[in-house]
Length: 177
Figure (spheres, rainbow, N blue to C red):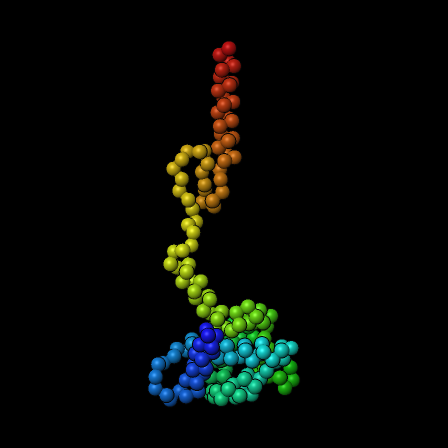
């Protein structure tokens, strides 16, 4: 049910993007970028053999998404900045993308770019709510152990100080005899 809801949401975002003139809830550029990155990664991941695909001809056009040349350039830059896709270099291969190893791992682990973003945001929210364990412990007992800024124990130094004191006491007692 959840995957179906997620798929419906993605389809609605892509549909709203196609029909920009429609009045309704405005979606942010970030949501559009996530939906388009999902579309591109799904195409590259699901085609198997990691075959490169043309961004405009094989990905955007079949989805009925039209861009201005500057819009395609912006999307190209956004996709490359993720590190999940890379451009294919070669004669008559301009405008083609292939999925990187990182993109392939992301898709196999999370299923989509939007799931990855959602998990990352949940993790950030969990850390910001204070559920993380404290980085230090304050102790009031005097067990001879102290912690410095790096959290390492100064036991060896204290033990050395205690031995030096006991040696001094033994030396004074030997002199008195």
